[in-house]
Length: 182
Image (cartoon, rainbow, N blue to C red; front, side, top):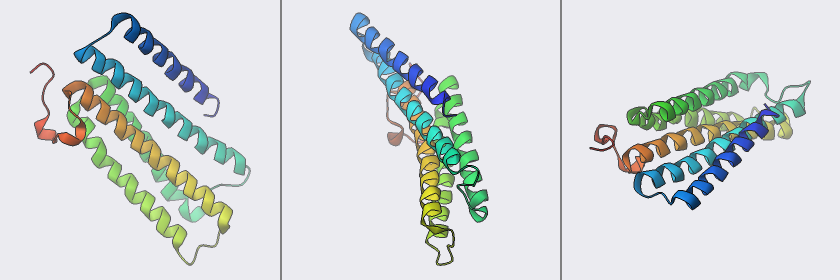
């Protein structure tokens, strides 16, 4: 995971260089410009997601052979990690299919991550917390990394909505999604 982040960074830099060259040579307008700009913004979200995944791996490695997460929070952190993966997989599907309704659903799916994040903080703030400050910091960071990872998946999906419709996802309701070219 730690080494793979460099590949994500390289891909993002390559896409950025290609987009700049395309802008300079082709001077795209309208839909073509929207595609280039949206691609640049999505690549930044995906690159940042790679950084967050790397942070999780580095924190895990830092605490090895011990665990960064105490047993009583293992299930919550595991749920957050699995949910983050599902949200990003759904964002990838949105990129491939350009399914606006699926993209709009991603923001609602992210509500589950927000609930897990809040539950994590409630556990940390409980008077019965017995794992110390260092573990509290680790758990707080892990929760934040997963929560932000999920937010980036939502952001990617919203950018696909903009790419397809020309309107920002916040301005649309799922039943109002226009069809490209209509």
